[in-house]
Length: 394
Ligand code: ATP
Ligand code: MG
Image 1 (cartoon, protein in one colour):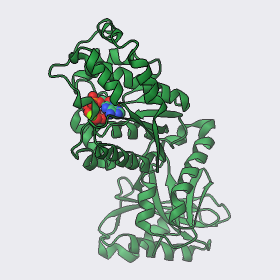
Image 2 (cartoon, protein in one colour):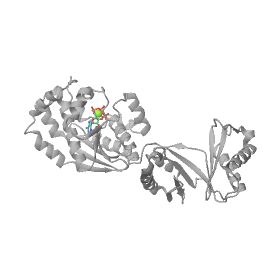
Image 3 (cartoon, protein in one colour):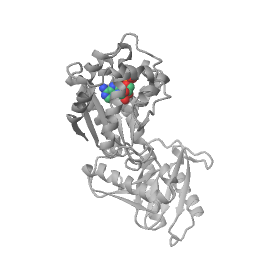
């Protein structure tokens, strides 16, 4: 039997004071959109909470899988609803509910009754002890016992216009609803790091667009498909992603032909960042996101990151900056991007990489090298931006 209702717990939104209403509304909107294909549901705010009510049959696993991908949700509680405000009906359903929910009854519990509806005649404290007694009568012989200090299971009973019984909390992803914190352009490659970075920024409520620098024939159509696949996985959490595919080949060859090879990656990254900034400005994005982490490769030393940053005025957020590779992999596995990320592919940054790239570049040195591109790179840069392929990832 499927639940008629879910109670949605949200942690951080609750701290938003006067803005709380706005955050809740956006969260409800996200939930409605995700649930729409799965059945007939009503998502509503009531009593300072969010409820989902089901008005049709639905696939439980599908619904939970959708909800656990929505940022802003801290927990999902499947609820049993009793419409009669009568002690006997409540007690009967409570006993049946615990019977259904827990095959193994060898655990401790605590009753937590809230009587918000004062027309119900029995006070919370008395309800706690009476309902607790009913459960013990039914299941004590199977190992059920009370522990009011450190229970394994907290059993909530809320008495309002109807009565809501729940005890399980399925963890949500936390964070803030996407759309509450502006918009970012994420530099998305086919690697492990950048999809995790995009996920982490989306988790803070930021809408995501993505840019991928493609360099055919040095990078294959397959590499591009892989980036689309990764964007699709991130979009399960962030919502639709507008993916900009930039043809970077001509720019890259110009850099290769004119600049010192040990500086290629830095110069290339600076141009990528600049293009990302142009795309961001055009699409009203406030910041750039990358998957860089200090020291991972030569272009990610503090010196290199500093010189790359100088290419743009816009803020560049690097949510992985202090994480070890293993910590990043752990997140990639959790969110489901890892298996796709490790498929073999070429990246334009690695195709042209020098044997001994600079690790302590200075802005002066790099700008001097970039002088050699003057008069050559401008039309290529313009052409690349004018021929961007836009793919809407859902
Ligand atoms: P990733 O695992 O995300 O590919 P990485 O460890 O391979 O990162 P780099 O290749 O130095 O490191 O890239 C650093 C960051 O630059 C990436 O995380 C990504 O944000 C961006 N980036 C690199 N290559 C591309 C590309 N072809 N298109 C878009 N962004 C890129
Ligand atoms: Mg990479």
